[in-house]
Length: 120
Image 1 (cartoon, rainbow, N blue to C red):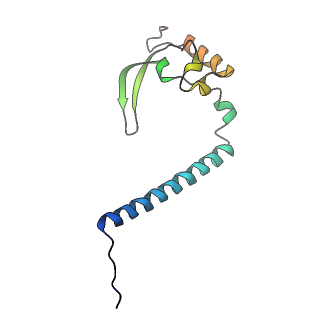
Image 2: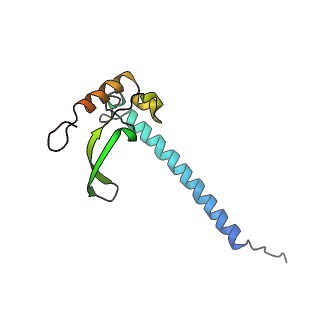
């Protein structure tokens, strides 16, 4: 009769982790594809209009006091916006340095008012 060879608990654990990791990777890839498809065919999300929404580098945003906390994030008061002199030096330069981004970012920064209605 042939001997059955048992795998060590560590080998079984590693095999299970590898299998879970592969399933997770496939799930992420599938969700990513579905999200792109839905965005592309959405009547709500419009990538052309989304480009008009100003984006800011985290270093440009002056965060104030904590206003509230929830299951997914914390909400802080915005105390001001100090635009970088050279957005091309930002880690997110591609997202914040286009002509339309520069225009909308400047507009928001120049017209920012805190809760009391006073300009920064």
